[in-house]
Image (cartoon, rainbow, N blue to C red; front, top):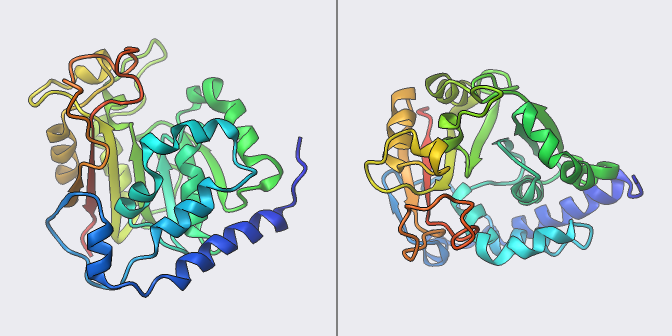
Length: 279
């Protein structure tokens, strides 16, 4: 099954990184004009951001990418996702609940050959997505990615060792109660995220929106969560909310149906939050 060399993989990843670097001189004004609607609470003026259109195009255009990924490209908006993540070449990214790796692919291209992505899932998830992961990582095609399996309250990374933590469609899982048991204590899980991030690092959350004021049990019942719960948990752990975005919002979703309901599956209203660990 392994047919492509690690050298060829890194060549493509390197090309994506060069594309980012070549366009990295765009001004803050241009970056803001291209950005999804968002509310900034702590602007980052340190340096211009990469050209996320270039890196997204390189990632989704990779002919070796699993064909099934392409069906999700339009609705998941890869360019806007990377822009909100603020991922850049050379970063170490810890991707919580990576699933089969649709976002892993983007992150791998974005951090380039000098960066790294830890692709984390709970152990039990491998029964459902293991074949997809094996196909994606075959022949070390994404040579800067490594797998990690643990509950959310015991993350496989050293203290202050990562630049960015992403958790896409996941925090509601802290309130999911499968027969196999909890996937992680909520408070400890947020503390673990805080622990592994470097000072100044970012924690980005995307999840299915519940109605305002919905209880934690909605995470189990509908696989949704009220973003106020996420905000409070993150802030209690020590994070500061830096930005929000509506790039995956869907006002036609009334947020009362389970996310697997066929009338809304794949098109739920989703919120995006970016937190920062203080320097």
